[in-house]
Length: 430
Image (cartoon, rainbow, N blue to C red; front, side, top):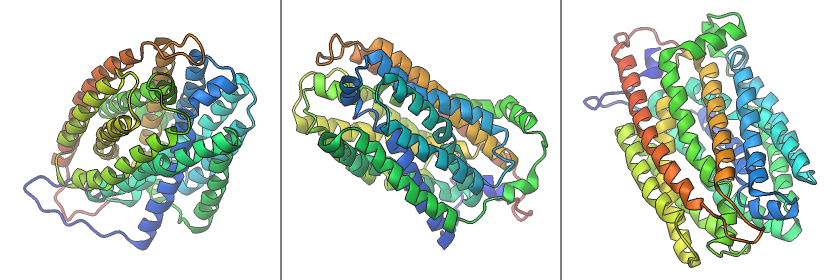
């Protein structure tokens, strides 16, 4: 176990092992997989203004459409958590990703608010478990000293979705209708699914160290662990800001900032480029410097830029691009160190369940945040400016400060685990 959870102290110079060819394949396939999952969720935001007008949805209904994915993802994640360590992780990944692809096509078939709501619920049931399975795979196959770089590469899926996915999706939506964005994700998902089935090796070492035979008993033991509960709360709070800010991002840009639908792809394109640049840098820094300090720096940048952004009126395109680039640099500088630290919390036998629970709580907290944002933000007509958007900025800033305290507590917990590690040289538990 010590090899998996070991994190060198500042006085040590750790030798970081190189990636094997199969590890490189895992990084690439998980990054592509995360690209489709993130894009499926994130495309709702840039399509928000179009969907609200086309499907005749109010801001409150759109908030429910966004949060429906999160709530169903959270519920399915909790139900799957007890079984997450009972099966080969590859088989779980194939099962849930297949359902996700089917749900994405269902979204393209939606004709009104209710059918879109049902499609998002179905997609969330399967899509919500994929992230936790992916994290468990990363934790099983990579030592802690490698995970910052791995997370950096995988999180680049966020940037790629901004650079390629969202602009292309918006372009296709403007050209052939909003449904084409979901068709694009679905077709790409089929290709990735075939690659996973064909090339990925089984991930089943965790089956050798199982203690709880009953899945529900395993779930209960993982939920009841007090050390794990710190991670649950921290990761749940981490998702609140994005779920509150993003759902109405395109509507805010169009109706308040006066950015046209044709200009929206440029905003997301340059934002994605900035994230693409910062992710590898943050990934390397996360493996070399204090993760709490890096998280705090990213949080400070995020708070400043969120308060500026949410209080803007009509603004030139170039200025919005610059503000968004800096804002997302701060946001993504928080995600990598927080996620990397969180992977060091659970023991090997609990990893699948722990990752499923944290992912579920993250989705549920985000769903609550999206619903709350739908009630806070108000729009008189489909073309009038959003009201109270600045209040979201104040709420997100407070939540961000609280999250810094939780991440500090996780870091302290990880250091305590390191102090209890057996003397190096003992057999590694893999």
